[in-house]
Amino acid sequence: MHSPMAPHAEPALRLRGITKRFPGPSTDFLALQDIDLEVGAGEFVSILGPSGCGKSTLLYMIGGFIPASAGSIQASGAPVAGPGRDRGVVFQDASLFPWLTVGDNIAYGLREGGMRGKQLTDAVADMLSMVHLSGFADFYPGQLSGGMRQRVAIARTLAYQPDILLMDEPFGALDAYTRSVLQDELMHIHDRQRKAVIFVTHSVDEAVYLSDRVVVLDRSPGRVHSVVRIDLPRPRIRQELLRCDAYQEYVIALGTVMMDMHADA
Image (cartoon, rainbow, N blue to C red; front, side, top):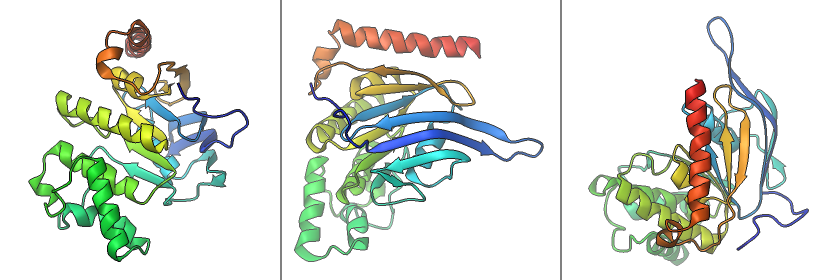
């Protein structure tokens, strides 16, 4: 079992006092309030909470797409002032360029970074192999299933080697079987690459299965309700975990927290 962050190591991500207000016609809407969070290098952290608690807003702020109203965000020790190649984002919608082939979608960010020739070709081939899509380089997104498109989106983001992977319910629109397959693939990629991952989800099972820690946000305004460390060994094998009492206890405990929030709404 690995330790996500060694003592005194510089965290991959540090949030201090993050608050977000959106202006309204008569009064501001307070979406997030006083969020403190640190994520270690190589740590997989899921953000879990009810609809409208600000999970996606928090992710977009880390990505640099939305400014904070108060507080500070640091990625790899540097202040976040906007989007950057150190943070790669995968959305629920694969958001591929429909006019580009799979290979060209994956190559896009690498070309923007100046990669050319055989190095580019080899990098795209490596990414396709990693997400089990070798042979699909010349297909267009419209010719692929939803799960395959999401694999391409993950490959495109990982291709330019971001330090932090930000994922906004990337499997939420998929059927249950495809979702479980992509969870397993993401787990294997994370075990190999050990990137810091911030993963937004509504699913308690998904959060427990994938994560080193689960951060539960309270109902609006989003605040940290609780943080649960998932002390399960890696690599994780789904069939074994489903028979594991500790896994079931995490699922039940977090599920109870979520149900209590809905009951209090």
